[in-house]
Length: 319
Image (tube, rainbow, N blue to C red; front, top):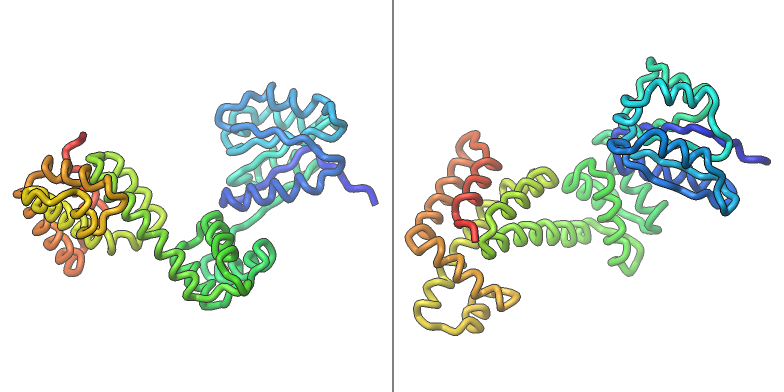
């Protein structure tokens, strides 16, 4: 049975991961080894995109021109795209990746008439656990227990790309093909703590701007970071103060690294240099500041993210 070829396809989803999955799945259905070309919808020119679609492939298969972030592209070239849908080229396929495409718009009706619209809705929060279970089995050949799937959903949320990435790592690490709740906790928690360590390491390098950037990313991807940041920063301040004290006592860097569990060992000298820049008085004051911040978090509606950001931005002078 011959496969029906659609000359114009719109893939609609509010989730970028699902968009990408749907594009790959669609391209796999195109016969004769299609040649895929990707464009950025914010910068792509209509003429360039349509030239690709209209040009026969030298290898015999169809050309598939995929426009990412196609909402802006459609807005800029709406009438021309409607005209193209009225007489599309048979030499290739135009694929538009959209966040949304209202059915009331003429471009929707034009594509629906001669092409195909693939609408992929992301799972709702209460559906995440089942999505994880199905995804683990279908794409990673692993069985994940309901408790483990629920833990993963609670830790990561509805970031499907991140969820899929974590499932891939967990599937590789299990020797039985079965992912348990303790596997999720050990792997995901370790990664989050590593991200927090990376943030404080930027303070060690006297790069407060980079520390702030990483903090903002942490808050966006893991809101629970707000409740761990004060502890991590207090540990960093105490370690910096202790390193400074040991250096004044002429303790070798290698011994300081061993006592304070600093790795790699060469970070000792960077930490001491930063501690000297901050100063002993400021480090001691910073401990009190963090204690007060921790108290206010527990007793009032303090904006934790903003408070931590201010601390990161001011504790160390730029290198």
